[in-house]
Every structure is written in structure tokens, then in C-alpha cells.
Image (cartoon, rainbow, N blue to C red):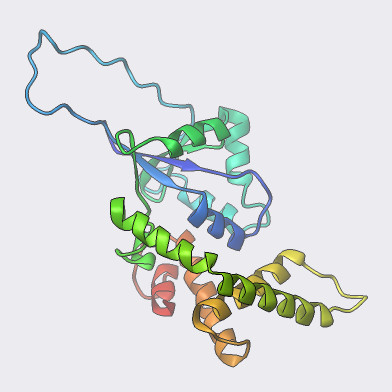
Length: 249
């Protein structure tokens, strides 16, 4: 069976940064592979496998598939429109072709749950080249088995620390108050942008003890440049988004 990917999607209206965050936390590309039996088998014991039914959909243009439309929608005011358009035509699970790979997109919660809760006998994690280059080979996204569980445990223990919890609570209250103090009665407030800004300050303070200022602002700009590369074409040459993101990392 050819390599095939499954991609999960959310249907809520979100900004590009939120799409990227969801991509890192909930949107997973999984490569389907067929497990072959060890050893040879005689024709007498070999059963004919039933044909695999591929969901409806379109693979788009040769090589690039529907990647351009996918990225265009991601940078628009309605990033979920790529999924919504195809879900209305083909259903909650459909085929596509993005970032150089045939892809099955699942927007069905039950299908996604079955895939995510299955073991490595049926599905294994796999990610796009642009993401793996940016995150690095030692990223928690790319490690498996005991090492992944150990890293998860270390991160969980860090954030479960009573001292860290207390510090994060105080910092969050401080940054919320500072942010609200700048609001004016005649000003349009974008809560999502304010929330992302506060969350960034809180996490940076917790992880590297850096207070708001010029250095944090510079770090934030590099972080935004880095995040933009997660949704870019996997082409690493000067002038491309992936190249700029790698320079910022």
C-alpha cells in the first residue's frame, strides 16, 4: 500500500496562530502502514485481502496537490474554510493531497478518536518535513517509546510543581492587570490577541525567567517568525518562509 497520511481538523473559527498551535497539539499527521507477516506463506494459507475503500475527495494538481489552497486558507480570515468546503461535498472524512503527500483528512470526532487511541500496529506518527526541520530530530514530537514517556513525565512534573503553579498564577494576574490597564473605553479589544500575548509572557517567565522588555519583544518576533514556518512549503532556500523560520530558531 502506498504511503498515506491522515490529518485531523477542527471546525472552529480561529486565527493562523491558533491553527498552528492546534496543529502542534491536536492536528496530527499519521502515516498508515501495512504490517506484513514475518516469513513466507504458502498460497494455500494466503487469504485475499479485501479492497481498501478510499474516501471521496480530490488530489488536486500533480505534485503540489491542494497545498497552495490549504496555505492560502490558513493565512485568511477563515482558515477552516479549506476543511468546510470539502466536508460539505465529500463528507467528514475525505482525501486530499497537501505538502507532497496523499492525505486523508478526518473532521469526524469518532474517527479521530479511534486513530489516536490505536497502538503502533496500525498507525505511527509522522510529520511534514518543514515541521521536523524546525522542531529538530530530538523534538518530543519525533521521539517514541520509553524516551517519549520519560520526557512527558519530566515536563509534567515541572508544570505540576506547587512552586511553579503559584508563580504562574501570580504572573498571570499581574500581566492581565497590566494589559487591562492599557485598555480605553473607545478601543476595540481583541481578546484572543490579548490572551496570546499574556500567555506568551507567562510561559517565557516560567521557562527562562525573562521579564517583559526589549529582549522579550525580540524573542516574540523570532517566535512568530518560527511559527510561520510550520505552515510553509518544505523548501529551504534563501527567500522562502522555511528558510526565514530556520534563521529565527
